[in-house]
Every structure is written in structure tokens, then in C-alpha cells.
Length: 275
Image (cartoon, rainbow, N blue to C red; front, side, top):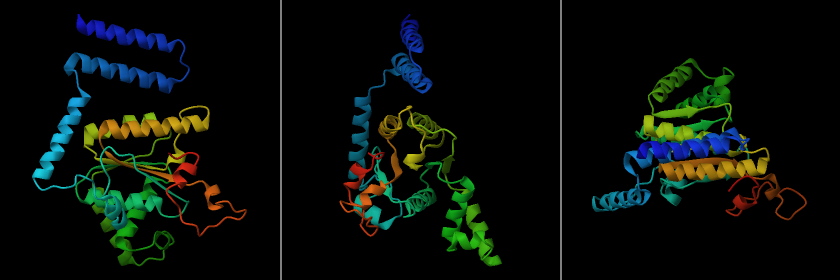
């Protein structure tokens, strides 16, 4: 009786929405949300407050056991020193101008964490997966990718690259390169990765190449940012979202660009698609 009533309530709501919602993404996200509510209602009445209590209890137990940080060390010295690593449930954004090493930072981070047994997910639309692996292998081998791709490396160096590729193959790194990638799509994929592979961290490279979730690009990207934050919080994983800074910030009140000006924290607010 109760199962039928819960299912009927959810199904009725979905049918009503189907007649006036034009956005299929929104419709299916609503469908999943209602189905999850039904599952919680019928199976166990999951209480988020109780989950929060369990997480704090685990944190306190770690302190008692001498584990004073549950953050995910990424192997990038300045980041680990400044922030202590990636914090689970925190929405981290790395903004920089093109070509300043955003993708390289993510590659180093997932390589380090994967080598230490921490499963990681990466949503990569800025380059092919082949190029991603080649960059990581060359970095490990101490060879520039340009030299390797143009045939400028020695036979021993190429063998070294192959050795590192085989080592990378064993790491718990899971890459998604979908043709369509909204914030909702990333949320689905992260939830699947957590369930199947137990990932503790994911990165998006990069925010501006995500598919807008609305016909209006600004509104669509705002929705994407909101969905990414929700994904991080709901799955309690570490995250790093890469984003290009707005070129206008280089002027800083001047008519001429000042490319030597260093980015500041306030630049995040000035970038029109980064929050």
C-alpha cells in the first residue's frame, strides 16, 4: 500500500511536468530525483542529518587515532602547503589564463593520487585521451611531449615512455570524454564512478567547454556551476574545476593589456563564467 502510494505520487508529478516542460534534461533530472525519494521512502528513510553526524564522528575518531587531516594530498607542493590538499565536499576552482598549466596541474594531481591508491575521475574535453596519456607519460619520463611527437627522442627515451604508459595503465584513474557534458551529466557520471569505482576526487577540464544547460549561455553555465557544487556536496568527494580567466582582467583599468599582472582572488568574481 505505502509502496504504491509513493510510486503513484512520484509518477503523477512526472506526468504533469512532461506536458509543460520542454527541456528534456530538466525532466529526467526531476525524474531521477523523485525516484531517489521513493527509494529512500520505501527502503530506509535515509536521514542526511544522521549521515552528517556519522561523518563528524568519523572525523573525531581520526583525530583520536592521530590522523589529523583527511584531505587528499595532490603532490603539488604549493597547493598542499597552502590548502592541505583537496577537501572532500569542497568545490575547488583553479582559474588561470590559457597555457599557464591548468591541465598540467590536474594531470600531476591525478597521477600522484592514483599512485597512492586514491581512485580519481577526470572529465576531459580539452584534449583527446591519447594526448592526455602521452603528456602524463612524457612528464614521468622527463621528456618534452613536443620532442617525443616530432621524433626528437632517442630509442631509450621512447622505451621509457612505454614503461610509464604501462605503469599508468594500472592506476585507478577513470576518464570520461563525452560529446555532451552539462552539470547534470557530470553529476550522473560522478555518482556512477563513486558506486562502481569508489572515486574520491574528480576534475573537470575545463568549465568553459561544458555544454550549456540552457539556451541562454550565461544561464546555462550558471546552472552547470550549481549542479557541480551539488555533485561535490552530495557525493562528499574532492574536486577541481578548471576555468579560463576573462581576458578583460588583464587591463585592470588600463587601455593596454598588462600580461605581467598576476591573477588575484578577486579575478574569480570578474570572470563571467566562473563562480
